[in-house]
Length: 200
Image (cartoon, rainbow, N blue to C red; front, side, top):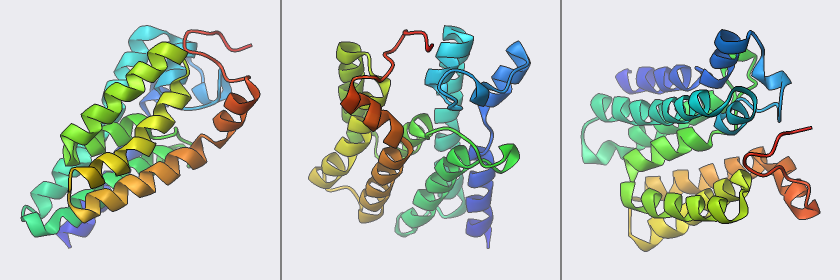
């Protein structure tokens, strides 16, 4: 029962949309109606600026960390890694489909980073550094995000991490590609916005 409660708490924690809240607090706007329409760090940068965007990125990642740690607290045994995985997954689902904000959230990349870094730090670090390099070269945040999630399953498999961690990495990769489907089309068409580029 405690494990089920922590999974629900993970979802409710993930449902806190800092991008939405900062939009309301700083400018009195619904950030989902501005820029790309996404409630995430990249659109926060575009609409609100660097400071709020960095805070959103850190806080969204922190949600994932806390959710996994809640799972570890509820089921501390190594055999109960599924609880940690499910708590992390619940936080990402909450971020993408938040109960507090009409189930219209972000794309879940920052929260995914928090979850996966807590479950398997080294593979996430390698994938994250690769993504940062790609973003620095191309200035396409969406491309870096997709590469991050695509690399993780291979790194986790290659480093022989627990099977539940591999399964969640595959699921989160599918999530990311589904949530970024319009970005993928724009990347193919050469119409994707670059980091620092103002949206018309």
